[in-house]
Amino acid sequence: MKSAYELAMSRLEKSAPSTPLTEEQKKLLAEIDSEQDARIAERKIFLESEIAKSLGDPLAEEQLRRQLASEIATIEEKRDLKKDKIRLGKSD
Image 1 (tube, helix red, strand yellow):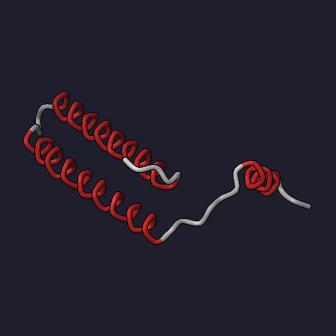
Image 2 (cartoon, rainbow, N blue to C red):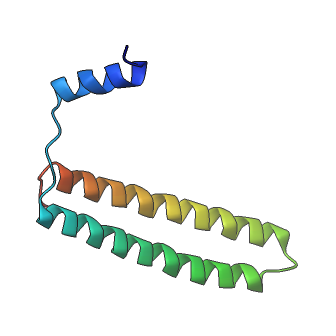
Image 3 (cartoon, helix red, strand yellow):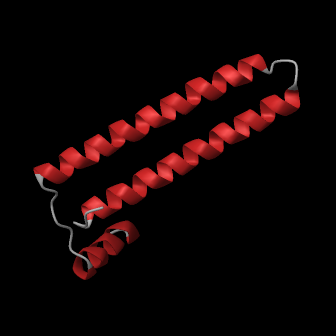
């Protein structure tokens, strides 16, 4: 007997069959991950140094932490959109 997950995956495969990624697509996906990871690291380094400077001002520190979380979320969202385009075979 199949689990609910297995049944759902079976239905999904019938409605939208998966296609294996080409080596070029895999390479592009890895490049996107690398680029976006670098952007996240850059923002973390910058904003964490700003947070360190703002010690003693909890309001400024909290604002910078929120900004960091927001920027990371934005970068990750862009990463996902770019990767989805590649998976679907669309060019930028």
